[in-house]
Image (cartoon, rainbow, N blue to C red):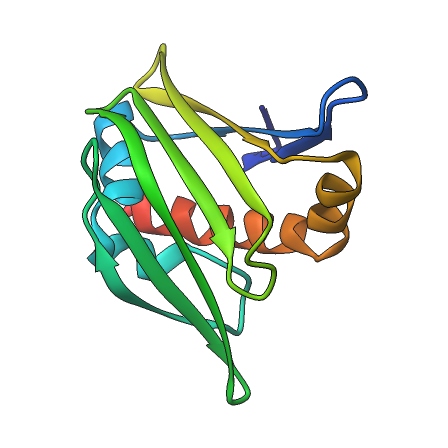
Length: 160
């Protein structure tokens, strides 16, 4: 969704299921948006909130692969890891996601990329957690800021 040239990130908590849905459109072809999500050298350039540095420990983005990355800020480290359950080039990524600060909170995430007219792409990502409390804690953690700021940096990366 765009307004005055700036893309809007929609983050919605489902009222019936402990799920968060993120929708965002990009002014770039689907293949380019997919690559930015699967190439670790690109992922570290845009993922996470402003002011945090990211480093990839490992990133094997294929069906059956896994990942671990770390965000750092002011000497603090925040680790994340998961497994890729299904990866279909330029179309779909299904993965688990765990913030290591809450190791029991495993989310099942699904990212779908839809081709739009004019060489644009719609991203729809869902994160399903095990409880409404877990979902609400996920939202209260400031993840919305990190998602919005990261997608703004992704816009700049895709424009290059």
